[in-house]
Length: 266
Image (tube, rainbow, N blue to C red; front, side, top):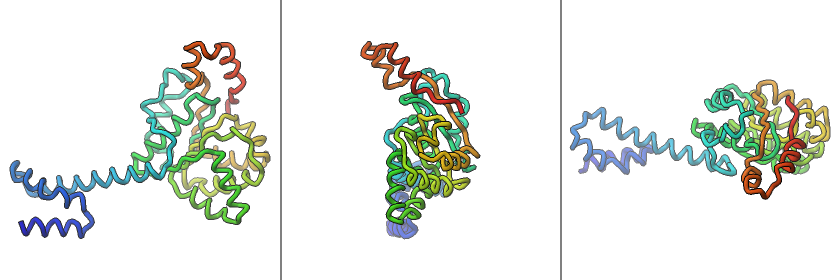
């Protein structure tokens, strides 16, 4: 008993609280099964490693600020046949993040861009990577304010820190040149250092108008697209699908809406 207490105290001193808390129960189980010492030690260490992995994942998940929990396995590829399933499967290995590459998801509202972005973010978290999700409007306003207060470098460090930065809903609203210049600073800071997943409902040809400066837009695209994977999604909105089925949204109107929102192929 004294030896067990001493072992538990030593485990705590070594920063192994999960192994310490289960030491006695694992000792009893090992004695009943007559496990070799090496097997008992491996079992105890595996408990600690597993617990730390779970705690790390929970911490990274909280820090990511994802808007919802939807995995890539939950994506309805049959409903959106324009999505390259093989490419998504390749991206799910996170090799693109290891190489500092970017993923650009283009398409009209409701076709699953955010779902795919969140799914890739969850995969990255599972792989032990840090992730941060932010709406484009929120990001641009934050950077614009920081620049006006002469704190842009501080905010750029915050957004440059995660291994994977997810910028959602780019192009929903136009931005002023101050915000556009700040975004260029962020893209430049992450260039070949950290990956960006960006969802947009505007084709690349429209970015100059969205950012209010074609030169800045070209500089941003040059860095984003240098090492990137682009998925151009064309199809029906998930959110309008049920409305259409129930007859609350006329098919003709839905078709016109989709046609007006279709992005240009890069």
